[in-house]
Length: 400
Figure 1 (cartoon, rainbow, N blue to C red):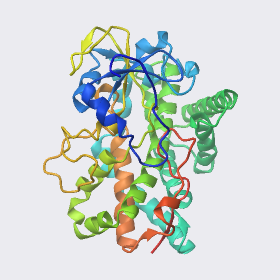
Figure 2 (cartoon, rainbow, N blue to C red):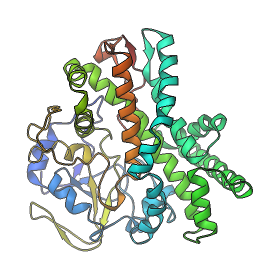
Figure 3 (cartoon, rainbow, N blue to C red):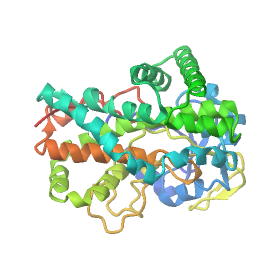
Figure 4 (cartoon, rainbow, N blue to C red):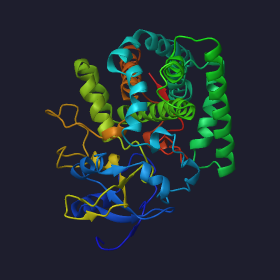
């Protein structure tokens, strides 16, 4: 198996399962795989190899603009050089730093009271709905949208219309024509917002970025548009689905819910362990990198210059060499290693502190308001979204 090219992914996951074949593959080191589209790739499933591949000095995203991108779908239409996702340092660093300042731990901490107000309003409506209220529809689909809209200065009456276009452009069930149309509508909307801010500046991240563009001359107009789009694209869908799977995991493991009720001071460690354990992305959806030189991985396999590597960080997070008994959720690990759920290296998630804040406020508020919270239907009846790029839950009815 180590010498051939494996067809990948092996199977479509249905819930939060992890294919047992990954354990055998991890023992072999990096292996060659072929996704439905694009050129072959090297599959990375261990923490040691992930650290090698996240070294931007040896691996590139920009290189992918000249390659057939490996993936589950044809993604030739996202070969756009001004997208932050497709940049390498120093260009990537220059633009990323402009957004990173706005998403720094101190700035995000200062948003706590404001975000808590949204949590309380949404949970008030959730509580009024009564037993059987759908956490996904009434909370997870709304909270991240409202938070990002407030930070970016998107009018609240437009935020959910904007969300629909992002849904269309990221869902597997959308046709290429639908995705292209949604992208054009998104770009038109962002450009209109930028024009409005230039007429009348406001106290939001978009105005900060516009000033950096117009007064500081720190990036091009296309880069400004792409950065605003990337912050929205990457900020709400991932948090939406992670909110759902986090609450589902706690509800389907009642002993974990009891644990955090009894040990509230251990909240950060508990959430980090959940983020490590939950396989948030489906296989083949994580983006990869191209080698800028010949690179030797842990099993002695040399990945040649120009080859693609795919880091399945949801699988990397189950590496027993780093997290003993990695398939078990343990809120009380001693000095646990940092997980890869927010990826790594230069492309580590710029909004991870905001995502952490939203999920922590949500779980703390649920614990405080609904200490006896539980699933309103059997765990096996909870439906996962077949079209999402993440392990997304369609409906999560709860009772208390």
